[in-house]
Image (tube, rainbow, N blue to C red; front, top):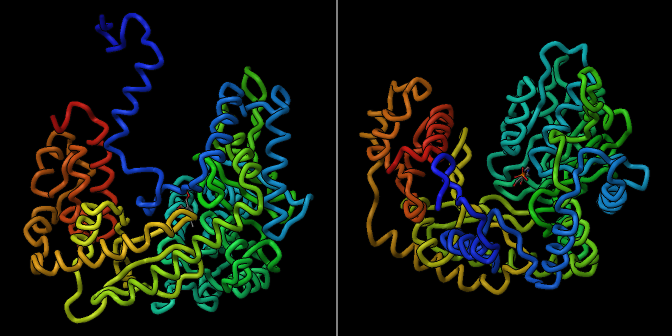
Length: 488
Ligand SMILES: Cc1ncc(COP(=O)(O)O)c(C=O)c1O
């Protein structure tokens, strides 16, 4: 029997039942292991490492990271995890750090620390390369800090230090570089950017969220990795996600600071309410200790040699993919990747439709993540290669070649002129949900899970829209997706 109000069963269900239901639900998800989902997931390909992480996560399931005096285990684990990351990334045992839930939270806290360290600046700004991760724009929105996005070199996709320096004003509270950028996998000239920031007395954050726990192992495997970490003069903070190339379960990132006062500026305390005195190092207050334990266990279970091997394998896979893509007529790799992230773009007079290519590749078992064109930077498909990607590179190249042929055989696709005309002048923010839902069929957006396999029309439309309309449309789509009364 079901409870009429909540839809819950009146009598609790057995765990096996629930797990079976979860297995059925996740059957429609992209695979999280095996390397064919070339974004979102990082598979170390080692069952014993996963078992260690799972066991550690479950062992700490009920521990609340809110209060380190009540649960000293979290202090011991965080010290070890932060210490390992600091030691590998140019710091030492005195380097202050914070374990956070992910790259976005690390970046939010880095921006908050920089903003709060300069309370005299009434309208603070951060200077970022145009290729910086969206998390900086999110931080800007949440923290009321203006984001000054500086164009990057259109050939190399790297930040231009002189242009970054020129964008600094008396309102600037932080300068940012990526190591590497997510979209193109290239490392910005960190040393020059940090030096220019230091000359102006400004802090410099290195976003090594995706690269921090990858680049050092690639360097050991023989890759040329430009200096990017805390050993670079002028770098004052750095973010490094362990739930990416640390291969840890999601919810794991480390934010390092060069000095203690900056970490203090990231903290929050409140003893002016009648409940328990709050002091937090992170945005979250009550939080599970599972991700911390999972990250700790993954680091310990893989060990430095494990990361070395995974790094070598990912580097080899990347070199094979880059060479193979270059040989596919109509495709090219954008820039020269420094890490194991590759942006596949088009070339020639008769470019392949990337959005159709993504759908065709997905039909052949490979998810390639669409990246829209922005401010003169071309559109591309993203591939992150991990330690297990090597097994699938030949199959991925086959899938790409076949997909290009299929897309070409179908001929060019008309631009979404009619839909653009329909959307022109619409203010999505004022539409009610029902009107928005009625618009969906015309836009090609579809709320059903099956629609996710044919996204070309949606991507083409998003790519044709100006960025503020992309954001509005995407926001309304998300809202509709989570509204069960729509799309039925
Ligand atoms: C360079 C970079 N910064 C920040 C982030 C944001 O990380 P998260 O998704 O963990 O919030 C990512 C995610 O891919 C990234 O690649």
